[in-house]
Length: 437
Image 1: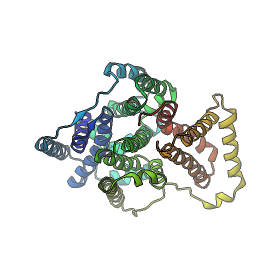
Image 2: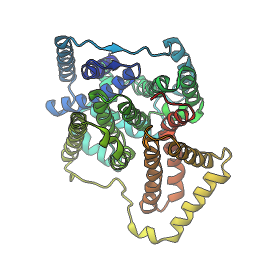
Image 3: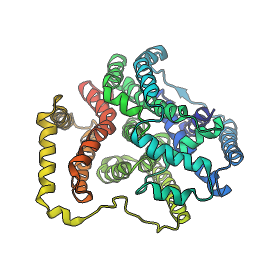
Image 4: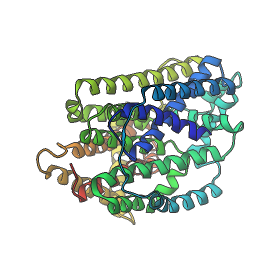
């Protein structure tokens, strides 16, 4: 019920904004992402209004919002066109079958998720759900640092409809986010490069073992991967069909990306800075809705953080990196560790994953620059700059974070590759085939 209601919230809003424009199959997955983010905030504000988690208040706010959306939808009686997906539902479900099998196997082995899943995200959701009087100080003493709240709030959303803390709600959340990521990828490519290449792109992403494992680990990284891919596709769809719908989707997905994890905050900032071409292409009305949606959601997320921190008697700002020491920049040992790690990653890895990743970025960048004038105007190249600068910033940041740099790099590197894998597959298959502009 919780998953369905969150989808209906997103679908209703996106349906209203579609107006007389075309409603595409990919919009269903935009609806899911929009609904997940809004359901997370509904959970928080029900806690804020009630002083603690109250199931009755959450249900009341949820159904008021849904009825308001659908009353407005029925009152408008908008007529819109539905674009044929070009990909039968059976074919898409067949692509997802290996994902179902893999994640079911992983869940049977790790019902509580991997390390960050049970020790951080599910633990925070557990604290929210129980709402004992002293849970905030207990939470702060148990976990160092702070993380955005989107994932634990959505887990609480799922638990509220089951009435208890079940292990399968976080697992299903991770599974549905995995399916939505594949769905965004496949259906965004169907309309531009055709049915068969799009199916191959989805099958290729699912065939990566680490994608299956990490997607099912109940980390917040699957949210980062989904919302980053969604932001890129929303911007790309806007270039194809300028409309309020995709301007709003881009603004909301970038805001949700910033609230998914610390890495999402950096990615959002980089996208806002480097994607100047997109903002220049927006007309005045579309630009206003993008800024309004993005700013409104960011204000909501800031209020979430301020409320949580003030409840703990903490200042509004706190460094997550509790071992931050700028003097480590001058330590030659830190730079040596980074150089040795990069050398192993690029040239000594059994799969040579690093060198393939680097060559892939280079090839995509050159392919974009060689396009004929008037195509995407360097859109893909800007996205690749976002990814490249992201890796550069995090590499330098880690130098001043901890003296155990080699451990931190090894733990984080695969997670970073996972975050960008869906977007890179989208860019690769988009670059290999001719776009229908």
